[in-house]
Image 1: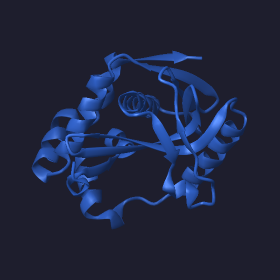
Image 2 (image 1 turned 135 degrees about the horizontal axis):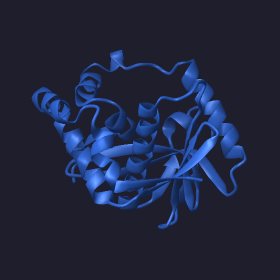
Image 3 (image 1 turned 60 degrees about the horizontal axis):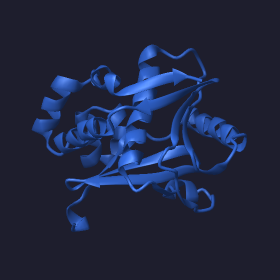
Length: 204
């Protein structure tokens, strides 16, 4: 496929922003929110967890999935050969919608990994911070975990195809204003409830 016709999307944007927001940031990147203090605190918390994780290979390791002219990039917080961990630090009691959003992100990333070649490489933004570039291929039967504050949850996806197809359709819809508006009209703030039957969340 000619790489010039591939449209690239962030998996994080697809599962946490509306189609209209994604379209807006694509056309006006200067209005995209910049990293703040909370994000920096989250990176520090993540690094502490990483250093105590048995079998650690690396942090902020990027994968990608390509289909129908769409490339979806996703960066995994903590990577081991047989498990991936997404880390969320909490500075106050979390609301249910935020927990659900984090779970959905993990389910989407896990589904993307299962449907990709499972090869990961250190994300450019992380190597630009002076960290070494690491490449690895994870096991086929990896676990996907969410570290949510002091609690850990295992996310098991029961239909990878359905979840990835949903977000592929969202990516395609965000290419034009009219289709972005229509997708949001149907799905905005409903993605978790629409997809929750396709993954299982188990507290560890």
